[in-house]
Length: 468
Image 1 (cartoon, helix red, strand yellow):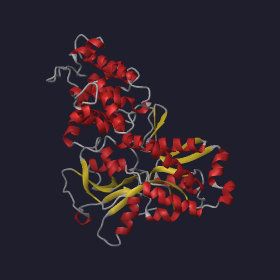
Image 2: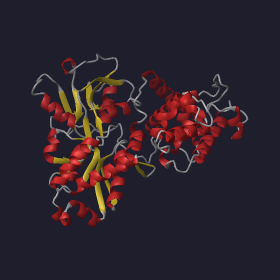
Image 3: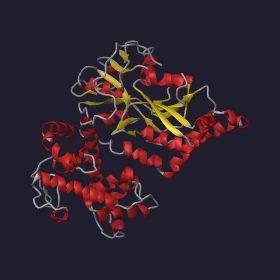
Image 4: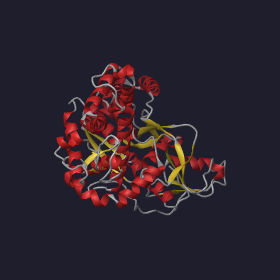
């Protein structure tokens, strides 16, 4: 996610130049404050908005919640399942704005107003591994399937005027993740999606890959009605400037995108196979001993450590499903590290204790990532990494910044300034990143019944050639 500070500044100057201060008492901002409620339209999606254990989550939800707090009003999210429904919410005045990873395409900008860029995406053509990999649009040997009303549909509609042989279709009542599943299962030839979505979804469908990426990148923004005045947009610019300066945007960037950069096809295939064949045998133990933590997180740690092998052992002497050292095993009351239940109980207890022992200044939402790094290299070395982060003028309570500094524990220039000295910080960095990827996959494979998300059994409508 590359924040566009220069764009914000230029847009801010335009807003200030165009606002009429004499009308401040009758603007959209004032109406929202008088109502005491910010109404935000969104899509059910793990990146934008969803419910887990009756708790609202998602990147756009977290940002919208902060924006409502900034405005001093309550937040009401209005989630729907399709782009057609989403834009209808705004057109009919049922919401004040849309927050759902929307790209400001040229057609959309004719009808709607877009806020500052939250991050940038690149459009990527996706194909199924094993099929011929096209290098460009001229080499396509099938049909590109996209969502109706999407920016991808708009782009293809314009492109077919230049390339009449291009075969494509748009579908209603579906989403991009479902289209990726169709490609993975061989029920669609190609689809066109944002690179960020592909990177997240490859953890579930490793048989899909990027054929090529279209030139340039596109900003993702919140959307408002073009008939409204500039007051809400001006407040939005102020809010995002504050969130950028406070580090909140960087933390959210790391939370939702920080673990998806690297994709290992072979590792993912092995993981998914073992999650199907081996994990059910041990799932009751993970559930029984997870305590206040998510059992899927403990299972992800165990897979990273031992690939769910009870007799696993490393050259350093750590053993068992959770790879406990002798000292740690004694600390958590484990007398047989090769016993699966003892190991899982001990590992879960140790991770929970690390979370509790971290400095209170670390935000609740990021404590687990700090604790996982400590699980790998020890709490002392993790605290040393925080010290290095502070010495470099950065925030020791932000996981994104501490993670970036973990490799410095290798370097004498830096580890000589620490209490515990040299540590394999780069390994800890990779350790946490891998667990987050496995955890994401397990969250998808084992969805609680209270999770509200789009499912892979959505009805597919008849294809159309319409675009917003």
